[in-house]
Image (cartoon, rainbow, N blue to C red; front, side, top):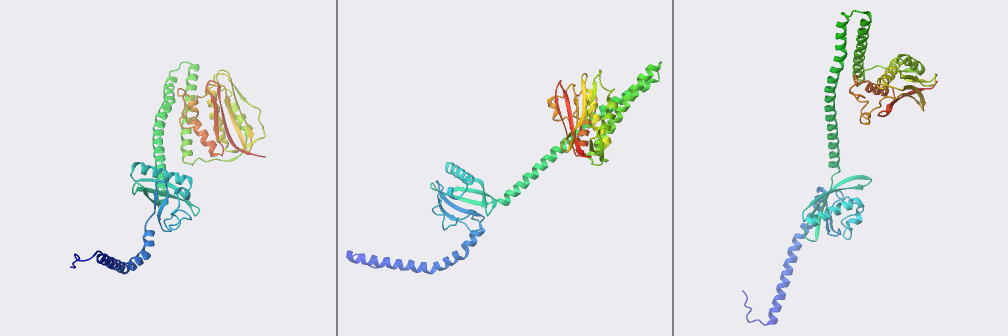
Amino acid sequence: MRNYENKTKEDLLEIIEQLEKKIDFLSSHSSDSSSPSKGRFRDKYSTRILDALPDMLTVFDHDANIIELASSPATNHVEGISPNNITTTNVKDILPKEAYESVRKNMDKVILTGESSTARHDLMLNGVLHHYENRIFPLDKEYLLCMCRDISQQWEAEQTNAQQQKELKAARIKAEESDRLKSAFLANMSHEIRTPLNAIVGFSKLITYATSAEEKNQYSEIIERNSEMLLNLFNDILDLASLEADSLKFNIRPIKLIDICLQLEQQFCHKTQNGVKLILDDVDADMYTSGDWNRIIQIISNLLSNATKFTPKGEIHFGYREKEDFVEFYVKDSGIGIPAARIATIFRRFGKVDDFVQGTGLGLTLCRMLVEKMGGRIWLRSQEGQGSRFYFTLPLVRQ
């Protein structure tokens, strides 16, 4: 060990200077020996490392000024921006308004809480909409680190899953509704079948004890009316089942409308209550529609049957008119009308006008399904206490 006690100040300064030169030489020599290796490693692998990362890494201050950007072409999702030209850029200058507001809101949350936070935003890249997730971390009191990842595939998978969940929920609701309707159907049909059947059985027994022709005729009419009601009920059930199974056959052909209306006028003119008038309005006797004769009869018969049932006074009008490429049929009455709460459900199963009037509640459902099968639509306008107007359309046939 050297003895520095007898050295002058000048000698010591010279020694210190020599030591500094040796340190500089050693440091330089050490750096020279290692930096080529480090440089080669960095040059060879840095791009690959960045390519392997799924995130675009950005450091910015609390004012959203970008301090540093680390990304590869694969992760850089801002067009025209690269690590070489980003240093004097603000996030607000490179993102659309909505995307910037999402990032800014996330930044403010991190600054306020001091904890990391995640948000999402959308960007157009090469004409394609991409979905991104930005996770922001506080580095210190001055800087934030943002890790931004393209989650477009994840987003699409989430949307697909959400759609599947929505469809599954809808299917479950539909199944539950179907079960409810089946229960309602069985309960309703049990009542509707039992009522006329009891009448048929009861009056069939009574007729054997009838002592006069008048009494026998009276019982016979009751039996006949209830038998017809029961037959109509079974026909409605069979038609509904066939329509839902898409197995009901239609004989579609040109139909002369006046022939149908004259037949129905004769059929219903004596079925009205208390002298209520059934009026066939002035119509074009040469107008034709495309449809099934029997099904058109069935539809208008249902509408006229409801009108006669719920019109205690006044008049019932029916007819048809041309509306562009369709024939618009109508049945108007001055009856009790339909409560507003029932109008929305009147064409659904068991959508009865009045719960206290006997009927299956299937008639209007059948009307809707038959009309739609023949290429038309059906609707109504009604006001409680002032009557109802039912309309439906079928394709017009021009002669």
